[in-house]
Image (cartoon, rainbow, N blue to C red; front, side, top):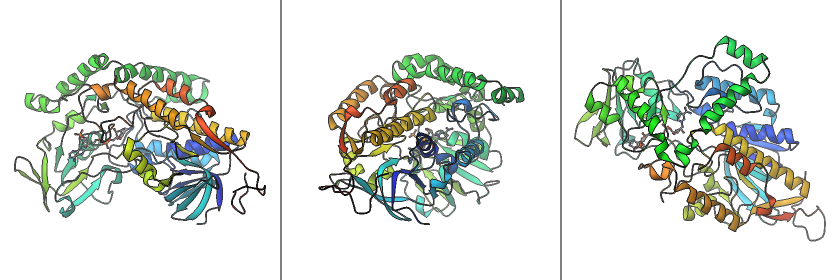
Length: 506
Ligand code: NAP
């Protein structure tokens, strides 16, 4: 596969973020872009997470692009294959796929201050780009636990995000490590056919009932044929979700009603008081991601499922040994221990104008960006799903669209104003993050009494947005050029230019 020598915009990642960026750039007239992805098709996390029971825990009506609603969702919470099929369909019908290259990874990106370009190295060759967009997603790098002996286990071991479909779990003894959003969907499914499932719980999660139902044919007909019907349904769900934002961002005690519903959810399925107490969390609802399920507790109550809360001491060739000295023999281990959202893996490959990598920069101060989008010292670099753009209460697709709007406006502004580079002022970046972190102190993620993956090693929340989605939309609605140091483009061939030979501005 050959790549062009130069593109205006180079996007890394072809999930929801990269796909939205491509479609919106194209729509805006900025058609000279390239999207690369290490996978073999679009979808990102929805392409990679194919574990049994994988289903979105955000309502379907909110889990699609606002510019490409899907009237055909079959249920109020969509299963993974439907979301993947939706993304595939949108990619195919949007006319942008000719600028996607699959099976290609970015291995290096160095800002060239003289040429005002990114010098890019990929597994398919080198090229330059004016603008680099990191849309690799926050949940793309599986995190494996550091457990003694895990590498020596003789049976099958795989991460929930890299499911081994060749391995038949029926009739086997399976260990599942973790009780997060992935595990609570996996366990009820595999317990139906496995001989035994041992669930290793480090921290009990809060789990609310999932109000799931099929979307009727009449509703689907209305969504397709009645103008505004689906927008109305989406709007109602959107505002219903937005009304819960203060539980997370302002006043955790507002979540007491939901916490009571979660406790009822436990008592409905689990009768043994000791087991009830082991699955009841010891932190405030919302501090970790609130999970939804109608079959998690029922699965834990099954005869062939055992909840193990003693920590894992080590793994042997055929068993897991817990802190109490017991050895639990298993045939396979499913690692459902999540991802590495506080360390953006791409950051180690991106080198800014002072020669330091983005990961080295963030190692000093923690991951941070101006409006989740840009970093001082890294001109013309934009993130989709950047630092502090995640949510506890609603759909990431809303946040992604806001970030894409900011990117597209930036690219348009650069073109209109003849700018070669834009770099956020360090003071603006600092002030933005100081305000954001001050606000973070009020949130349930800081006050709820838990240790979550939202926090980095310094205890700073670098992943979530501590306000409403509409505030984020307002914050990112326009590329605010006044916050940036701008360098005008020097026309090719003019005395004193430092533009590289053969480079043609587009
Ligand atoms: P997760 O929420 O980070 O859960 C990881 C689980 O593994 C936690 O129970 C954690 O315990 C446990 N764990 C981690 N390290 C461990 C260790 N060394 N020993 C024992 N247990 C360990 O990961 P996830 O379930 O894959 O979900 C990650 C995120 O993906 C979610 O929060 C959500 O945003 C997204 N997701 C979304 C959906 C969806 O439907 N939209 C579905 C799946 C995932 P502690 O709590 O003690 O750390």
